[in-house]
Amino acid sequence: MSVPVVWTLAGSDSGGGAGIQADLHTFRSLNVHGCSVISTITAQNSVATTGLFPLAADAVRQQLECLQQDMPPAAIKIGLLSNVQQLQCVANFLKQWSDPLPQPFVVWDPVVVSTQQDRLSELKPQHCAELFPLVDIMTPNLDELSWLSGLEVTDEDSMYRAAEQLFQAGLSRILVTGTDFGRADEISDYYLSSDGHTQYIQQKLRTKHSHGTGCTLSSAIAAALAHDYPLEDAITVANAYVHQGLIEAKGIGRGPGPVAHTHWPQQIDHFPKINTPELPCVDLQFPSLDQEPGLYPVVDSYEWIEKLLKLGIKTLQLRIKDPDAPQLETAIKKSIQLAEKYSAQLFINDHWQLAIKHNAYGVHLGQEDLTEANLHAIQQAGLRLGISTHSYTELLIAQAYTPSYIALGHIFPTQTKTMPSKPQGLQRLRRYVALLAPTNIPTVAIGGISLERVAPVTATGVNGIAVVSAITAARNVEQAVHQLLTEMEAELEVKEKNEVAHAE
Image (tube, rainbow, N blue to C red; front, side):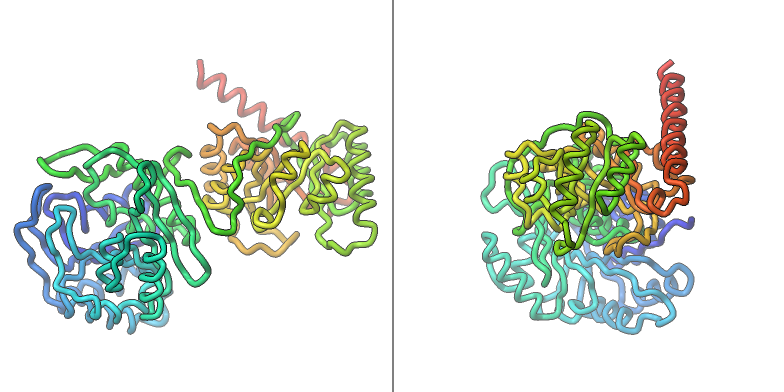
């Protein structure tokens, strides 16, 4: 698979901490090929900017056109634009993007002032509006948001008003970065769009070495997007990348040192807490499973539950999606009673009120159900909880509720249900499993997992594999169950031997 290409159009920082240099460090760390279009050469170190040398608009245009002919990007990060001529050059280039080429995702970090508080651009706010409809997201800090909107931003309300001004001027999405609004220990980025807003919350770090954080954040977003992550995940990954870079940042000159450039974020402590207005704010912890999920069939009737329990399945899910299905409550009640006789872990999908009423072992909820279900009532009733996730962002939302397990999907293309997300694949599954390992929350892989895919999925370290058609579409169900269990057990034995050999 070829490495994705990402462009950075920005100023050169001779001190190496921000601008083009920070962007290229970020691209390399996140495994994309970075191409650079230099707008301005700066003479700067960690203390001051002593010289600005903007390139002519024609020089910027030639760099853009040369790259487009041979190395088209999946994403473009725009940083410092020093004057109106450069901005118009970029706007015209984006307007005339070559039709046969896929349209790149464009991230704009509207750099105006350096970390050393030196002014870097001659642009006025009214000039920037020409570029608003041509970029997919802008990443201003509070000072830049105030400058662009003409409103003093001092709290959340004024931030929303300022963002609305930019939306009306043609911008579609904004990530407002580095806000604290008087909070002593927290710092937040706010993603704002017509669909609502999401807050990414981190603990404040006591460091002065933060040169290049804005450049790094926006280029990390572009890099993650180039890897085909959805925007919400690109922001999440970029936020974590900057946070771990700040933890490891060190001074080099006499002034603020640059954010460190490390690797793809892997520690859950480096990732942000995610909050939206719709999510319930509850501090909960659900009971643990009595045993690892293992092979975890998901079926749609009492008859299937009965058949699988008789075959020795110990974890399973009843998923009857139609709330108006005849005998719905009867099927749920009978399934719960039978599973209890077999000492099995039966999860009821969606119908949490009926699960509570009939004392189910557990409830499984989709991500969208978290805003509607009464999580407190489920926890108070002593039920276990499983939560579906389809991304880094949803995974972080789910783990904040300390559920009994987290489902990770869909791993492969599936015909079982229409999915709003793309298949995650094995690489992302490995990352998710490793990320959750320190939490001790069990993980279950789901989505398109057939017999031949069981071994590589098990090898990622998941605690369970949910299957649907691998069992329900089988000609011989008993044989299918036996083969799936055998394949899982064989891969686990291989993994255990490898771990012992590695330890020795």
